[in-house]
Structure formats: structure tokens, C-alpha cells
Length: 326
Image 1: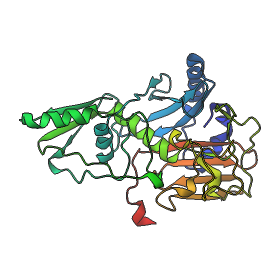
Image 2 (image 1 turned 30 degrees about the horizontal axis):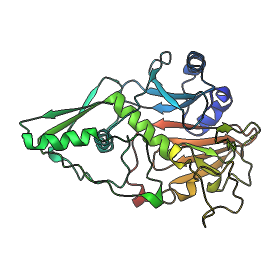
Image 3 (image 1 turned 180 degrees about the vertical axis):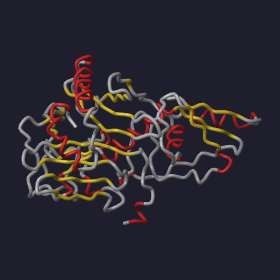
Image 4 (image 1 turned 90 degrees about the vertical axis):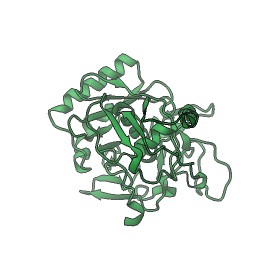
């Protein structure tokens, strides 16, 4: 949600179930403007709020040029001071975050430890995403040290979503020693969680981003939002994930009205599982589309003005039971 339209979308946020405390609205707005000024960003966006057991995290990001590739994420708890999020993770850290099913504590320095003695299956059908994990060894034999070090040295520079249906592959499960304890700092868990949610749920309407002939991506200057004839088609909502930003050739799945300048991102109609998005129009004015895979992620648009935004308001936990609920 762009800070420029922050006040215009407060009512839409309430309708979508993502209301912000009234007393926090002016403080948060001024804080975002300050963040933009200090970092010389072209635009700053309020990404969402992750609820914790004690003190919630507010997430924002900004960019200077490219609105997709060059985004920098920040978080705050006091609404005044913003800390930059970590950016590099290992496969092991990502796997740890996926196995945690509890709410965040609310302290960035909190160290969460996972005991692998009663671990469940480590297999996953998601790509690992690519900062510090602390390994504790209890009488661990030397023969296993080399394998663990190899795991820590593997990194990924990009984050890939499971929604790439045509490229899904199973990653090798980690063979954790039964007496190995793994710990991860909550700040790192927060950053990984935000990136996972952003990759699978952050969407924009078709036509919002425009790709210039030189390859640069900008916000379309005259985009006025989707109309009633377009709002009900999932093909008109595109993932902002940089991994979806790739050239498209003349394949069979290209839409009939394909336009290379605005159709360089993947639409949500191919997301897995099928039916993970649900939409509705309230009061004949606000269009709301919810993600069932990550409860709390919503896209909303004021149909009267065309102003729209994305927001996440939840616990940062994925609904892994969704395939059995649809």
C-alpha cells in the first residue's frame, strides 16, 4: 500500500479486516514519510503487520528505481524507528522456519530453538529460499561435521515460490542427527517469513506496472485501476515476485490480448492449489481478494476511485491444510 494513498485506503483496510489502531495512523504515516526522505526512495509502501505474542511488527519497503527488483524491506515495533531486514539466508535456515508452527514472540533478539529428536518428515515440495543460524551439538560425532558444514555453505540468492507449477521439484531432505538442536534468531525468522508471504501473495492489478523498451519497469502513470468487467478475472492479477518477471514467448498459455509491456508477470490463475484465492465486492464499492494459503494477505480496491493496495495482517503462519479444505 503506497504511502501516498494511505489515508484514502483506511476504510478499505477496515472492510478487508486489516484495520490499524486509529491512534497509530498519523504516527505511522509520518514515520513512513520520514523513512522515504532519509533513504531517498521514490516510493514507500506499508507492507503489513505481523501479530506476535507481545509486540507486533509493522513491515514496510521502499525502492529508488526498479519497483520490483530493488525493494528494501524494513520493520518496526515502536512505529518510529525502522530497522532494515536481513537479506541472505541458507537452505537450513529456511527449512527451520518452515518447521516452526508457533507465533512469533515479539522480540527480534529472541532465539528460538528446535529440538530435532522428535522431528517430523523434512521433505518439502517448495523451493528453499536463500541470517544466522546457531547449531548446538550434543556429543556429535566428528564424522557428521563435514555434512553439516556443506549444508551451511549452500545459499540461494533468489527466492522462488511454490506457485511455479511447471518448475516444482522436490528438495533433498536434511538428515539431521537425532541429538542436534537448531536455533534461529527471530529477526531472521521474520525476514524469511515476510519474503515467503511476499513471493506467494503480493499481487498487483494488470497494467499497474509497465515495462519500457529498454527493460526498465515503472508504475504506469495513467493507470486508474480495474473496472467491473475486469475485476472478476484472476488473469488480471499478477504476482510481484521477481522470479515471475521473465520474458514470455508465443506459447499456448498466452492470453489472447497479450501485451508484452504489461504481461511480463505471472497471473494468479495458475497458483497451486487451485482455488487458493477468493474474492468479493462489498457495499458495491470495495473489491477484496483474500489469500487462503496465507490467511491475512489481501488485495483491495476502491471501485469508485480505482485506488488499490496490498496488505498483510496475520501471524505469519501458512495454511498447510488448504489442499484438504478446498
